[in-house]
Length: 368
Image (cartoon, rainbow, N blue to C red; front, side, top):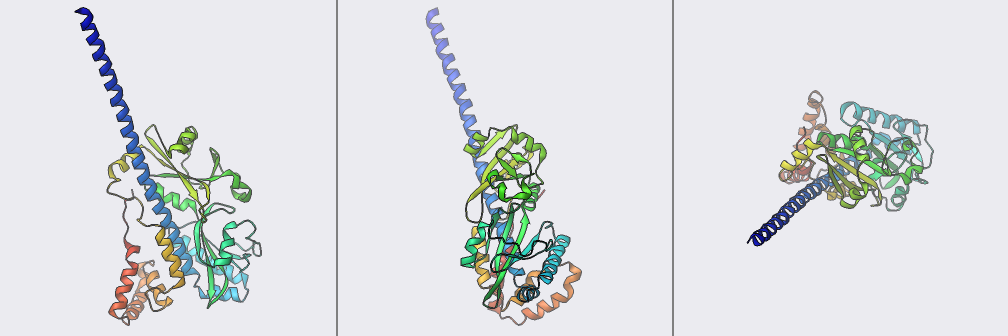
């Protein structure tokens, strides 16, 4: 009997051990599934955030390409005047908006630099020899936008400048990735924009930038404490899984593509413990980024082909768009002009304008 009792005890102990291991296994798998689901959600909204940045930058370049004074400077071959116009526009935006790294430049039809907002020392320099992304633009003459390599890794929107039906050059609007990283920081996400080091030969201004694994960090406003932790990660597992969780910190790795859909690096998103907890509680109901997609970029390109949209002309459209961006004290005279202009539109035209602009005002998210 003692032998049988001992055998039962051993069997029960084995069953309990198997159950304990199974429970621990399923708990771990459940945790991994939740982390994977959370990572996918954040990546999805991250991509929508990228699409918003691209569409916003392209819209801005579209508006600037209609600047009459700039067109006159190009057609009259006045590089100094073009520089002064670009410089003044850049200064105004740095002063009155949150965009502090905006740069503007104009190329001629052969992609030589005509003027730059930050100085004209490079006027006459060819850009085509190290900017592969410009080759397709030479032939299709369509606006393009995306993260592109250059002397630095930046968001770039490049659009042909038309004078009537003639293309007289190209306008390029540049914004540092630091601006995008700052937005993510406000959402509780720290960004490391990582460019593959094999491209450093064509990016001289980045050669002294800090490295992370086999990448160079393109944004200067990265979190230095989290960089130290990221240096110690198992990067093989991170690149294999796409995410890594350690010390209650979630690391998410996403490919970085240029405008030609070529992978040129990675985006590393790091969520500190408080951010992980926040997104775990709210991700089913709250989207941290504006809900836009690549279709919005396409819409902006189509708008370039019909710049007045639902308005009767470009002047009316610009008046309404800029009205919302001014301070209240600067709006008084323009409000009267806008009201008088819209009174001449019929009901159907006004409905078209409202429908066209509806998505620009609908944003979902929280900023802490």
